[in-house]
Length: 195
Image 1 (tube, one colour):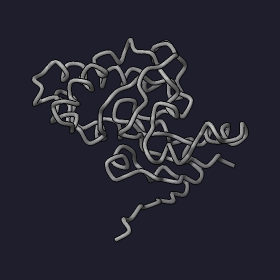
Image 2 (tube, one colour):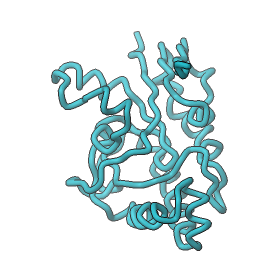
Image 3 (cartoon, one colour):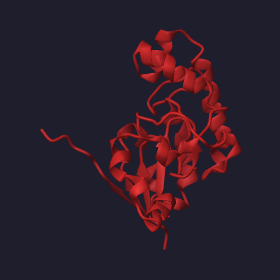
């Protein structure tokens, strides 16, 4: 019986700093994606050399935050890392409260959760990643939209792992980064505003 997967988006909020070695020096859950991650990183670093207006547009932030995000993006290859589950700090990750979970439940989360990312493609909770900013729906010069770039790669990477039940909690821009037909059974969770 295949282990169920839970697909999560990253968070806009991220913890700064890190204590682990650079991402390329650390084991990753999807090692076949490493060469493709380098392509996205190269396109992102090149884009961060452009004028602040262009960086703001690519990153979807104002000029004040664009400089800070650009600095983090330029140092992605050499920056210290945190496990993805600690790096992401948005509402979903705060509610998950991973540190408060029992060891057995954390082990289950580590095995079952896959986090989609514009920069990394897909990571598992324990995968070490540095601070960065890149939305799945951004447009990088020379690469295009990360969702389009990652779609065939993530579909291949998830084909075996997604053969059972897949709980898809991805927003539309992240769902565009894979082909859900590879899932044995897909349960899509949609979040609605309470109005």
